[in-house]
Length: 303
Image 1 (cartoon, rainbow, N blue to C red):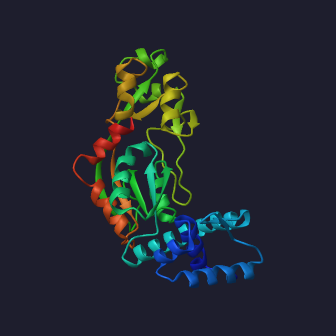
Image 2 (cartoon, rainbow, N blue to C red):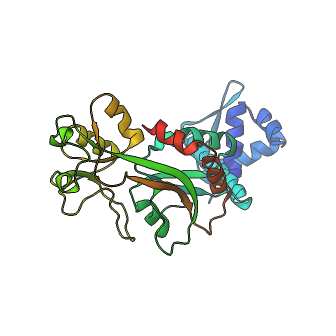
Image 3 (cartoon, rainbow, N blue to C red):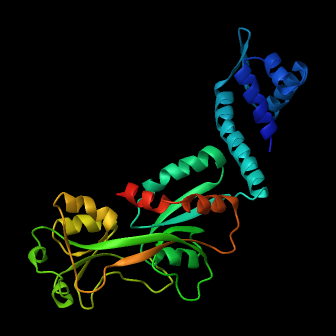
């Protein structure tokens, strides 16, 4: 290879400082050595890189192309060196975070901004998972850390977990739905006669889970929690929604909360991660999200 990162850094300094003499001062080299190095590089490449324009050293068209693309390589090399140094001190190159689909990734953004401001360098990858999909993301190692995993961990799981509060659900229907005026509590046999709006579990390996679905009930499967709420508002079906999501629509009269026969629907939420993962970025997120009130704040910001 005829050009090195050192040579690109030299060309960058000459272009930035405007002259060989000024660049030599920046690079702690004598101007004659810099001139010789550029001439040798031009001979090796077979084209002129700099030309004299008054007292300045100006890039030729070919030289400008070489340096503009070369600066991309310089930045990439700098980033690589920085990331390697961070990994050597215990910071992960990448942290993959799965978020339960009932939450909103945007609710995590203030925490991410705080992380970047103080410890940026680890690349973060966010993804949504639904129901048992959060646990499955750990089982299949497509995620290192999950936020708001719903329900208990699967039997035999060896993940590290931390309780993250409780999610309460309410059974909701549109104001014009037949169940809106039904006497309460609504019997199970009556609720079963109406279509349920559901989000498909995203598990790939573990057994898929359902929530609030009655045996034999017709279903309409939608892509996410926002679509589920919208489908219920239009009367396409019924179902449970997180209280923090539904309460605004209930207050505005767009949904009606109804009581079903049987216990109230709720589920524990968890933070969970690979038990053999000991990176410092993971440790930071676990500690930050475990602070008092963080789970409740994220759920309310989400909706």
